[in-house]
Each structure stands twice: as structure tokens, then as C-alpha cells.
Image 1 (cartoon, helix red, strand yellow):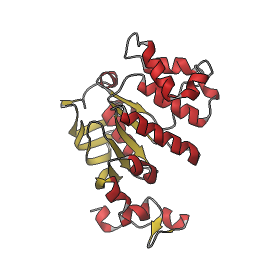
Image 2 (cartoon, one colour):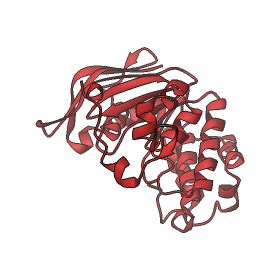
Image 3 (tube, helix red, strand yellow):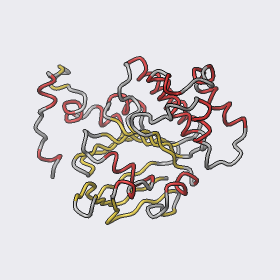
Image 4 (tube, helix red, strand yellow):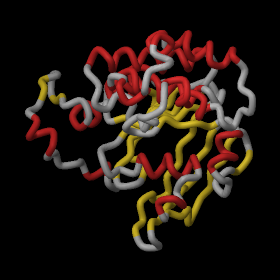
Length: 261
């Protein structure tokens, strides 16, 4: 289990971004972390994966533990070796390298990764198998997202962190990525899914957290959150009997006081 307890993160010794954040990802579960831009989702990932220092951020309070061991002071490579990998927002594939070379970089912490590891990824992503010798920069957006996920799976993770995997994809591809996440979870891999697409995330997660201004303002099982009026209004654009608001109304909503208490 991943446990983030009462976490505070400051950038450049000045900007307080996370304000007592606490979340859990139980073994074998999909957990959704939702929130608008600027809520602190990416900072949460950086703290878990040991990448805060790269961005001049520091944990000033709280702790992060993985399988009962603290990891908030570990370096990124140690965290990967412990079983946590991530797929960054925007895919971040190595555009000038081939599909196979990209996958090989994902196995860096597994010296001498067996052919079976590659075969497992190619079985999950047949489109990549067909284009294994192609340059990654020429893949479609959906294929690049598959490659980014496949690269993360090459490290044989126990926990996969996905940062906005549906961003910029057509609805049909979003459904495909959604099914891929379910398939990965069914192999026993826990998933922390960071998304703005609340409907997609909560439809496959067992539990969800909603962040605003660096802290959790609501949590609960996915069914509870999907049926909550605030979530429907603020994240699904619905109100009343299911009528969809205008974009202007959704963009400029006034948060209820209890969300900021």
C-alpha cells in the first residue's frame, strides 16, 4: 500500500503547494486523484516519485510510505526499483528513438530484462508490436500514449502512476486507454490515476480523492463521488436533473464554502 500522510510541499522555500495532503492506494486497487489545473496533482506525483528536487521543491511536513517503508527521502531510481513507476503527462516518449528502444529504456532498472517482458508488453499493445522498429515521433497520439504506458510496464511495477493519460486524445482513444488501465490492474498492478476527466476516472476507480488548492476536499468510493451534486456540477458539468451547463458557467463556478473550509 502507498500511504501519503499529512504532506506539505514548498517550492523555492516560498510557495506552499500541498497543505496537509493525505491519500492511500491499497494493493490491487485503482484510485483516482481528481482536481482542476493548479490543484497540486502533479506536485503530489513528484513527491511520491522523488522528483521534487528537480523542480526546487521540498517536503516540509508529513511522510510517504510504500509497503510499510518510508520513501520520501529516497532517490527516484530507488523508488522505481521498489516497484513504483509513472507515466508523465504529455507522454514524453523519446521521439527520435524507435519503439523498441523506448521500451528498453523502461527496463533500465531491470538488468538483462527477459524477452518475455517485451512479449508481455507487445501482447498488451499489438499496435506497438507492428511498429517496433518505427521511430516513436511518427506514432499517433494514442500510440505514443500506449508506448509511454508500455515503457513504464517494462520495470515490472507494483504501482503504476498515470498523469492525465486521456489528455488530448479523441473520445474513442480515451475509451481504449481506459480499458488498458483496467487490463493492467487485473494483472495485480495497483494504479494511481490522476485525471481531469472525472467521468472516465471514477468509472474504473474503486475510490477517489478530489483536490483543491493543495488539499483533499472530498473523498469516497467512486459511486458516491459520481452521484455527488458538487462533483456533477463542478467536474461533469451537470446540475439539477442532469442538464448540462454552458461552458461559461462551468468555467466560472463559485465553489461552495465547505469545499474551502
